[in-house]
Amino acid sequence: DIQMTQSPSSLSASLGDRVTITCRASQSIGTYLIWYQKRPGSAPSLLIYDASTLQSGVPSRFSGSGSGTDFTLTINSLQREDFATYYCQQSDSSPPTFGGGTKVEIK
Amino acid sequence: QITLMESGPTLVKPTQTLTLTCSISGFSVNTGGVAVGWIRQPPGKALEWLALIYWDDDKRYSPSLKNRLSIIRDPSKNQVVLTMANMDPVDTATYYCARRPYSANDLDYFDSWGQGTLVTVSS
Image (tube, rainbow over all chains, first blue to last red; front, side):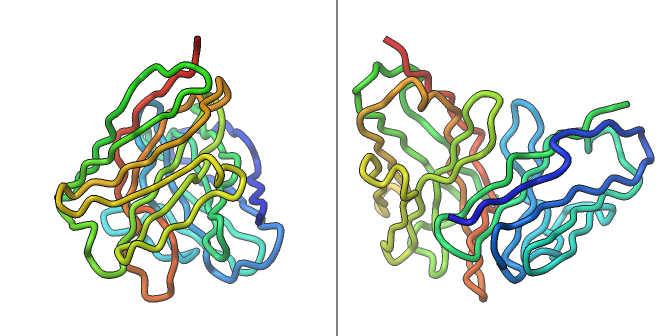
């Protein structure tokens, strides 16, 4: 299985900050990388697929980049509703595997 | 509007078989290119993919759980059913069903999720 490693595992940020989360795959996955947001008590929500394609309806302050093994999720101008846990997922080979998550907390 | 809703027992005993149903509206399990998957999240832990069934009845399973899992479609009810045998307390988790949309480059991702159902395994 392809291992997905996210860093950091948690971070504290203030409203309006720019936040960067990284995801590293144990082998090259091209751009077969997806990002989800998960708030406590809610289902995961799709943010970005194919490494950089923003899902319809997702605010443009979210962006994704990367290819191969290293990927980044950036949140520009952090809003209150962005405080959540973020997960990456690879879809290059079966089984799909998720990263361990990055919890974004209010500073 | 796409909705998925999980249903099943909230408490199962060790060694029992868990059966979860995903009831779907807003798309058909027969829609070309579409699949429905199951993903779980143990308390305080990360997401774990379990199984996926495609519109053409192709099925994929987590290798680590393959011997315990079964996934089927019921087009007449527009449902997907997951069974997991020999439940253990470590299987305590919130179980989600989710839609994998059509993808031109065969990308397996999930764009619509159910709210999830918490299953506790305890005697």
